[in-house]
Image (tube, rainbow, N blue to C red):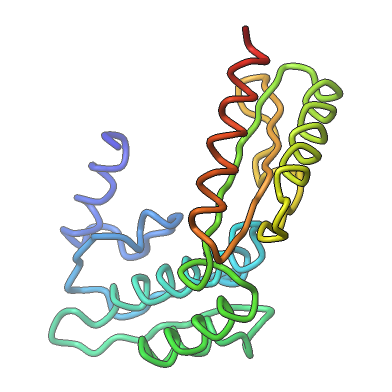
Length: 199
């Protein structure tokens, strides 16, 4: 954003000794004079509703760690966390990409998450929370009735991390299957049903 450019320029020119920021500080910035990076509450992103939360946490921490020691002076990274034993944080602290990949793939295989399985996320929005809840439950029931062969797992509806945007409530329904064809057929039927309801 244009508002942060003067701040970043002053920091790069070493007129400001400390820079506090959000995730944007971790991404794509190159300051050779940075010798210490601190990450507070590093585990907050671990517990989001998205199955990629551990991957995002690992990514953010490795990017933040990469900000320190880019110049001639070695750098140091301090991570504050309530989950120091979580593999995402342990592997990020060690910059162990292969170790993280192995652990994450075991987790995703166990839970049936992509790429080990297929996942369809259906985001529903509405101005009235009660109507949205009823519609979401109807859609869930319809998805379960579509599953004649027992190949689909329907999860939700759940409120996303941000449950309301621009005065519209939000709900998410997840449908998982190892059979891509079954998931595609379910998606087509759901889209057809929703289109008919709007007519």
